[in-house]
Length: 481
Image 1 (cartoon, one colour):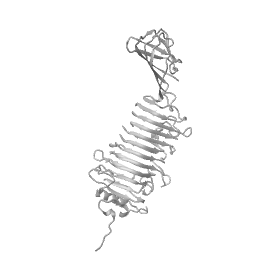
Image 2 (spheres, one colour):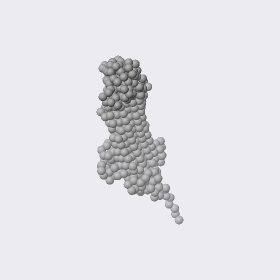
Image 3 (cartoon, one colour):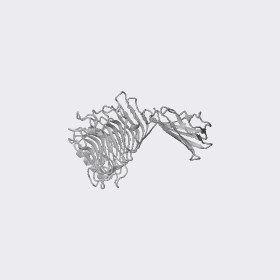
Image 4 (cartoon, helix red, strand yellow):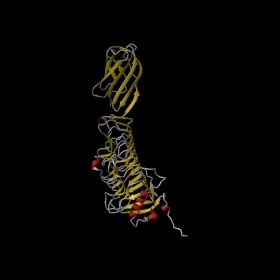
């Protein structure tokens, strides 16, 4: 009786181990052919996997890549559901030795009109993109036939992409995918190509790119004239993103939660950035935005450009010394925005009313001395000149920068012509007066008008008025220093 030794990977339904198929973990030999064959085998096998649910009626096979360094002379192409799982970014590494800067180490989709709903996951490895003669790309998720193919259900996590031309790129109809816990950065390789050479993240929205989730992503060592992120994906989320390069995000109905640019390592930024560190287009909600030591010499127009009806809550500008922040923090497009909870250091030029057209700003006391900090308060009217003073029910004001909106709600009162109401909360520093209008809530024929003259803190020129016991309101708007 003879026995045949069978590896675990040969058992139907078991994960496939790349070493069992002849991949070289030393990096001395090219492992591309072995690994591509293993990918095709796992795709055809359709085994049941505990990692990922079923997609498009097929179960997902798993290819295990144990610790080691694997040389790749050509891209690994994935066209069907599969899990490719390494032992971690510090243990499993692919060295991509191509001489083509436009190529990618991993291609999911490959222009196949029949590729649909890839699913599966890529996890637990790093890719050195400049192990050859040039820096190449890391990962390309590609569906170039809108309407007939789509990439969805893909989960890429715990992956480092080192020294890429483009870290990862999305093209075509790519929706409901998750990219998380990724670092796109510089590390070794060919001298002169260390770092992110063109784009950390790039999306070409030529199809239906929507509902994707990018979270816990770091893009650092961004080189001169390169982008950290240039992304367009509608109704998508960008959470906890940290870079040292320029960011542009376009996402109709999308969210950005936790985006930080800390220092800019490049000598110059891309000309297409127009002098902005962050460009936000049509993003619906933005929270926890931060610029730390982003020098004015590199971001010459403003820190953040905002286009679209956007709610921005929680912005932090920090600089360690003068010149280490943009001279102007924001530029807003023509659409209405809401800006709140902004903190800035003293070496940043303040914003005024002219910068904030169509912007509602509040709780931003550190951002302006000219017109966008909104505070509320009460004041005590003085009716000393009235024959019969009214009963004050409420006396409130809203201060929006240097604009003052005063409201007074009273009952009754009698005054002679020329009476005044003293004690307004702020003096009028405008060049012209403010006109007050008081309306009787019981009798529309009753009421009065008055003036707050430049330099005064009193309402004057009130005509003779008998309000009896009626309730009345008065409103006035003017400007202070």
